[in-house]
Picture 1 (cartoon, rainbow, N blue to C red):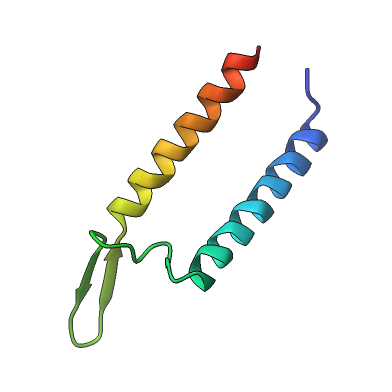
Picture 2 (cartoon, rainbow, N blue to C red; picture 1 turned 45 degrees about the horizontal axis):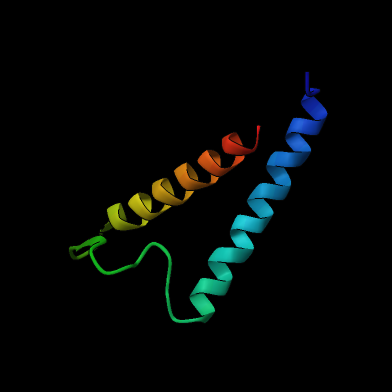
Length: 73
């Protein structure tokens, strides 16, 4: 069983890599969270973002990653 410390370190490294990926995609002209199909609602003093295409992309990539990891075992 994995200890809590190792789990937190793994989660931190995973978040760091995910953040680096988002920054790299932004530099390449693909701003994550503002993909085509993401909803941005703007009023005078309010802006609401609903990045459903970005969430869908994350879900597909996460499912693919977990499927690949589960296939190894």
